[in-house]
Length: 101
Image (cartoon, rainbow, N blue to C red; front, side):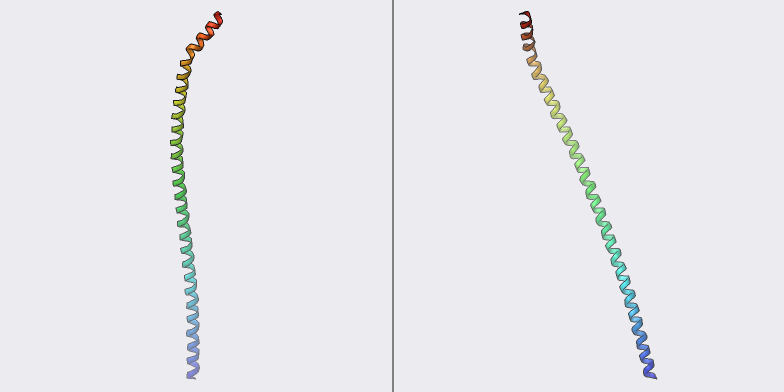
């Protein structure tokens, strides 16, 4: 009788140990899932931050290039106007002389 009690007690303890192990495994799996989700969210945030930084840098670089191109175009227009103005006098003189005949 005492042996049966001990066996039943041992079975009960084993069943409790199994249930506890299952609960621990579920808890560890849930913690691992939460950690993966947190790591994924952190990676997504880092990716967004990197994209935003790249966009900001590209926009600044684009503005700088646009300003440089505008300045170059203004210089070229001024040079062209200067070159044209220098040639305008002789060209007008040739036309007037031609017309006078």
